[in-house]
Length: 207
Ligand SMILES: O=C(O)CCC(=O)C(=O)O
Ligand SMILES: [Fe+2]
Image 1 (cartoon, rainbow, N blue to C red):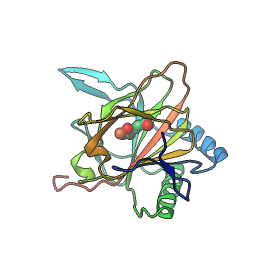
Image 2: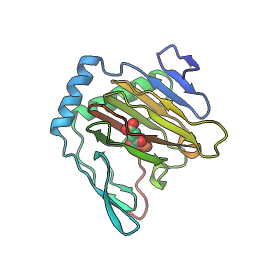
Image 3: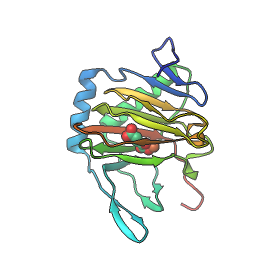
Image 4: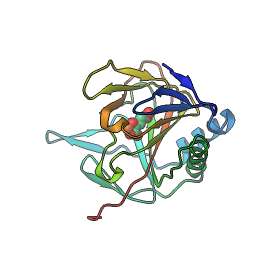
């Protein structure tokens, strides 16, 4: 699914709200080397979520990284310090977005590790209050190409998939979290994938 291509290589998958995919963010060799390092060097966690009084380990692993803490599903997470590879990716993302006229910075990132096709993420929007009114989220994919599935909250149009190849960047622009939900469905026979979703978090007054 692609409407047209920007001069800088960004593919406009949805014009409004904007959903834009960029390829070859780091270059294949560097992206693969970084995938291996993040897999080996990060302190991957599998927290449990409490649902109807029972603890359920999430079906993937994750690391929060950056300058500010984060609340997720009612719990507080202290961030891990920036890993040099993650800083390199953040800078590449900010440069690529600046080149296409999107001046933005990110102060935190959620890294998700999907060991195989059984690991997944359920339907959600990234719309926590500390992300502000119309958050901009930049999702970088390393490793196996797993489609991100989107559905409209008002169901006015069908759900659709967005492929996320190795070394690609998906920009979810203003309005995407308000109007759509996304999920990473399980798949058969898939290998390791790590995603990095960069965000700007405004620390709340209660912090
Ligand atoms: O791994 C993905 O592609 C999706 C991650 C995501 O939705 C998130 O981190 O909020
Ligand atoms: Fe998300």
